[in-house]
Image 1 (cartoon, rainbow, N blue to C red):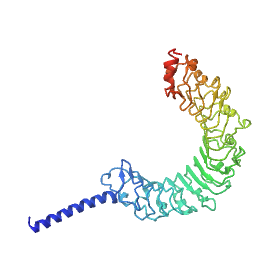
Image 2: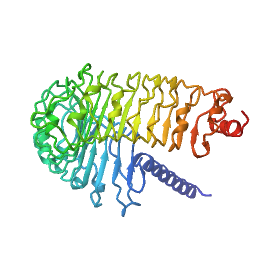
Image 3: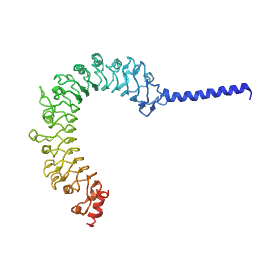
Image 4: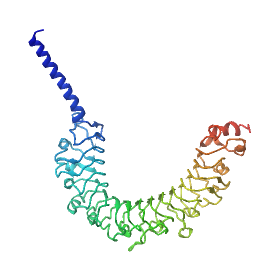
Length: 458
């Protein structure tokens, strides 16, 4: 081969290798994202800037979700999404868990009218970015976990006609953000780390469409009566409020212009401080679903309860009840009762006597030693009983008398499978699913009953 031909071949090889390397770099660096039928997924790729998206195969597909969470982004520059401007789609962009402190005014130029949701949680923003002002169809804005000190009234006014879901961390606020009243279409409001002990009764003025309110962390001494103006409220969640009155049941300030909020059907109360069951039935007379956990609760004063026909599901998890509260029997329509992780040792004859509509009961992770033979005498509608992780050493006779029983859970107990279980001989276990194993042999409990008890070998 001549020198000239050799040089020519070398040049071709260099060009070929360069194109391969360039193509590889383009695939792995310029476009590190993956694509599905509705998402551009760039989560956790170590990105320091918005990448170029390879949309050649998705020209006729709406990639509604752009996931840029958990990267190393510190700013969003102007025209960061110009590639998407020619596609007539609606977008939800997830920026959570970065270190973003700056979003340029024209960061979303070209797609402003197509942004439905912005997830900006846990970044480094000190104020609302001006860039969102032009997002005329913005529906969801989540900015909790940012060191924001106030809400710009001009920006709030511009997005108020469209935003229905909003969250903010208030830990650095010096005063209550009255700018919330601009969000007159709001249906879901989540407030984190409220630094105030009290609120003016007009704090939620204008938020007549709010259906869901979540208060995660505050300095409240009592839950403020400002919530009484939320006439459409149907779900209230109160978590991690350590200064609420711990020795009284009246944790709510009384409403000034109304006696109750009749539209509330769901109430959740967790990781607060409350020895006594709070006075929720007065302020929420139509509540159907109650969930409480990890409040240190020990008492339910019987004199504050009247017969209730609205509550159908009641959860008291990780509390400190040492016995079944007799007040539970006032919930005449109760269908599902969850009492996991309390300190209950015994179940007595009348503990559930008033709960005739009960279908599911869960007593997991209680140090239960004994259940009387008539404990479930009135609970003829029970289909599922869970007694796992207790101190029981035998199958309680009372469960064999439940006519509708379909599932019995006895996992992780010290159930001794011996001929002393012969009293279960008349029990038709073939129609019941029994979960759990014998303590000595690890044989399934239902198999032992069929093999030894039902077969007459004992």
